[in-house]
Length: 178
Length: 174
Image 1 (cartoon, each protein chain N blue to C red):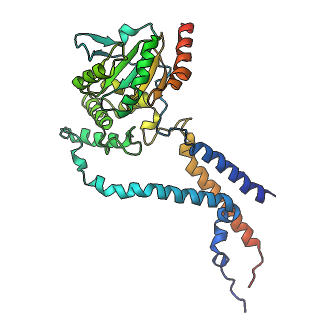
Image 2 (image 1 turned 120 degrees about the horizontal axis):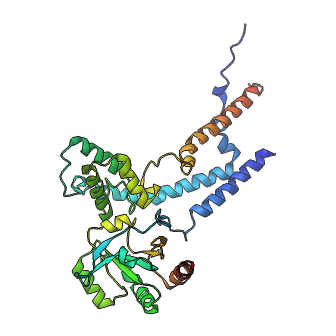
Image 3 (image 1 turned 90 degrees about the vertical axis):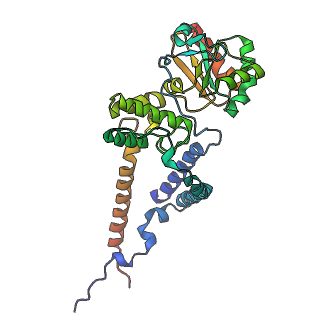
């Protein structure tokens, strides 16, 4: 009897395995961040639009904020720009735009021509802050709570659906829990 | 006169040596199909290799070699063991994307600052997770990865043992 059941069981196991492994809606390149639940790495950088202004995690302490990693060379960042502008108009949270490995003049031009969704634009020209945050591409979007902990990371261009389903509920929860 | 017995194993057809193939026809066909499919998918990648090879991989960084040959050896070994998160199947030693260059710079600086190999691997794992290492250390989480080959070997050995024993009990037919 087991001679017939065993192949069948193996077949079912393979179907389950392939259903997971070959699922087209799963992004196989998106990696879970080990920083979720940990204190957000500190940085102190100058602002792209005003080099006399410093942007630091220290100054953001105590508030829920979103950190969006972007760059002018990043095609997908151009894609999410409209959505970021829409999010900025909601005035829900400060939107910090970490300008990753970029040219400062190009970044300025981008923000003046396409619109600036950010409350502050820290400039990470050599990518050191990005390494601390575990950034491996752009765009990436982090959510930090009132205790300064990273509670969520989203890899890919921001969409209205992701903002409403993944970010807004977490922002509300982070505020009520504080 | 006693006729010498023919060696039993020699008369076995190859298929009986592969119990999986005879026991799990459907599953093995599926496996074979998926292997063929993955081979087909990787064909363009293989075709792309010569053009990639034409770029000089030695000139990845502007930096000169580390002055201390011991440090340089450690640098080469560590960067080969760290995965480039962008290309994911290349090490940061081989990749020429920007992130890999940044991570090489990080390793170089930490080596010059006198940090240990463990400290460097820990630095990377804290930021990018275990996935950044090609050979993650043995832990409860990675036990399955490290144990799977041995488990499979044992399972295969067991199946072969059973089949051979079963066949050895069969009457010889000539």
